[in-house]
Each structure stands twice: as structure tokens, then as C-alpha cells.
Amino acid sequence: MSRKVGGYDRPPRLWVYGALLAVLGASFFPVWWSFLIGSQDASALNQPGWLWLPGGNFVANALRVIDTIPFWTALMNSIIVSSAVAISVVMFSTLAGYAFAKLKFRGREGLLIFVIATMAIPTQLGVVPLFIVMSRLGWTGSLWAVIVPGMVTAFGVFWMTQYLRDALPDELIEAVRMDGASMLGSFWHVGLPAARPAAAMLALFTFVGTWTNFFWPFIVLDPGNPTLPVALQQLQAAFFVDYSLVLAGVVLSIIPLILVFIFLGKQLVTGIMQGAVKG
Image 1 (cartoon, rainbow, N blue to C red):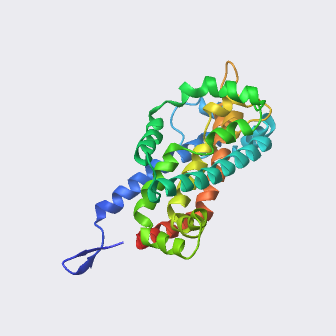
Image 2 (cartoon, rainbow, N blue to C red; image 1 turned 180 degrees about the vertical axis):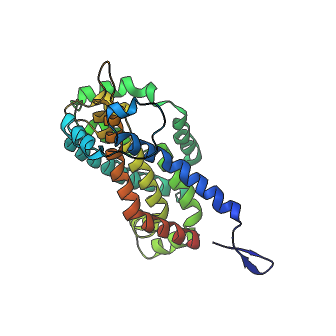
Image 3 (tube, rainbow, N blue to C red; image 1 turned 120 degrees about the vertical axis):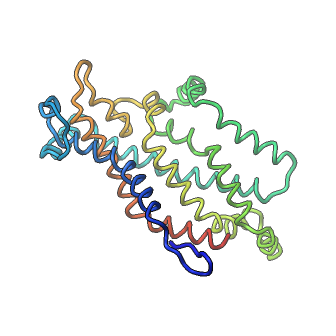
């Protein structure tokens, strides 16, 4: 990307690339360090000095992780929960954002402020009543107890409201309504396509956040039916922690997220650029 200065395209300065490389290195270093430790054995970690080159035990450690915890069950549970929550958050947040951004009804601004204010409430304060509700519904130990409470988020509603307020012209909605479309029809044919770039980013953020969530799944799920972060906790013994085994499990849990970015990153960036051009 270049900047136009005095009528000429001027490439970014060297320090811009240096700053980007520094951010990239700082972001990648935890993953590399986890792989570095996960490829060693327990005896190598007790040797003095720093480890800068990976060892040859990552595959063995990964197989030990798979044999020690219910890895495949946890992986499938994480895929199901993260996908279901991401899809529901996008749908409900986009629908609510469309209403807050484009519909005129009494108390709209006050209700939106109330929704945004709920983000200031710590999650820990609602754990006890939420667990009681899940217990009375008979959902404790099942994936429904993790999926249903996360089906819509205040951040998602705020995100989609702000985006649709600027990206979707009122004249387009009025034209669709004059053609005979209902309110839900105008949302489906106009609002949802216009919200696609923001919805893609919201889906990605929600998927990653749900995938890495530990607190609530650890409380409500059984040890035999966990998600990946909860299952990795089982690798820690009472008096000894094999960090090579634990970090090998961490790398295994990160691989699906890396694959998501590899296969969907280009589509996400393309959607964001299209939304920026339309806006």
C-alpha cells in the first residue's frame, strides 16, 4: 500500500515495515516457544541454558497427549461449540444491529445503551445463577450449557449496530419496502448482505474466543465430555507438571485456529475491503 503525497504515490517508509515485523514477531513468538518446549523431553528442560532449536520429540509428545486425554472428543466438542456459537452470534447480533440501526421505535437509544452497559458486568458475577439455571434445565455436562448462554453477545450487537448505521443507506431499505418486501424480507435481502464484511470479522472473533474459553466450560462440563482447553487442564498432575507434554497439547489446540486463518484469511480480507469501498 502506498500513500499519495503531492500527486505521487509514495511507498511506506522503512520504519513502517520494521514496526509490522516487530508486531508479527511478538505475535508469533508464543506459538514458536510452545512448539519449542513441546518438542523436547522432560530431561532436556532441566538442563541449564536456553533452548533455541526444536527437539525431535514433538510427535511422541503429541501422541502422549492424545492417549492421556479424551482429545478427539474434546476436539469435536470445540468444533461444534465454536461453530454453533459463532453462527448464532452473527445471526442474532446482525438482526439486533439492524433493528437498532435502521428501525425507529420508542426507547431505542436507551435499550442500546443498556445492552452496551452489560459489557461492564464481569462474567464471574453471573456464574452461580447461570449454573443454577443450567442445572434445573438438566443441561449440566452437556454442550447445550455452553452453546445457549453464548448465542448472542452485547459486543456483537454493538459491533453490527455501528457498522449497519453507516454502511446501509436508508434509501435502499425504503426502496425494498416499496417493492413489497416485509421487514424481515428487507433484512434478509438488504441488511444481511450489507453486513457481510462486519459479520465475517465478528464470526472470526467469536469462533476464536469460544475456542479458547476455559472458565465456563470448566465449571459446567464433565471431565469425560470437555472442550479442548478443559481437556488440556487434565495434563497437569498434582505434584509434577510435564511442560513439554502440556505445551505439545497447546500447539495441537492452536493448529485448527491456524488452519482457519489460512483458508479463510483471504476471504475475510476481501470482504473487509469490499465493505470499505461500499462505505
